[in-house]
Image 1 (cartoon, rainbow, N blue to C red):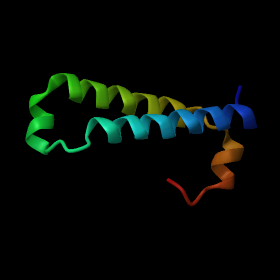
Image 2: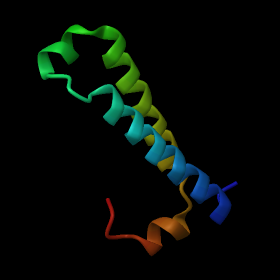
Image 3: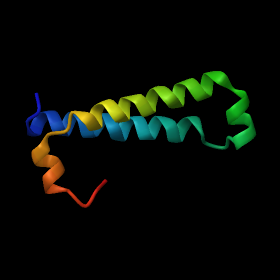
Amino acid sequence: MRGKLGDKIRLQHIADAISEIDQYLDNVNFDAFTENSMMRFACIKQLEIIGEASNHISKEMKNRFSEIE
């Protein structure tokens, strides 16, 4: 499902994952982050979701917005 509907869903997954990371890290300093393995794992998982969704965005969408890395 690499069509427009697929892209829309994948972009929503990316936005949701970014929002999750933002919530995890709200009012958390770097030391607290590095000391909390559960928080690090949760952030890494969300980054995996972003990467997986990004890899499945259609070529048409990538070409349409080629200025975005």
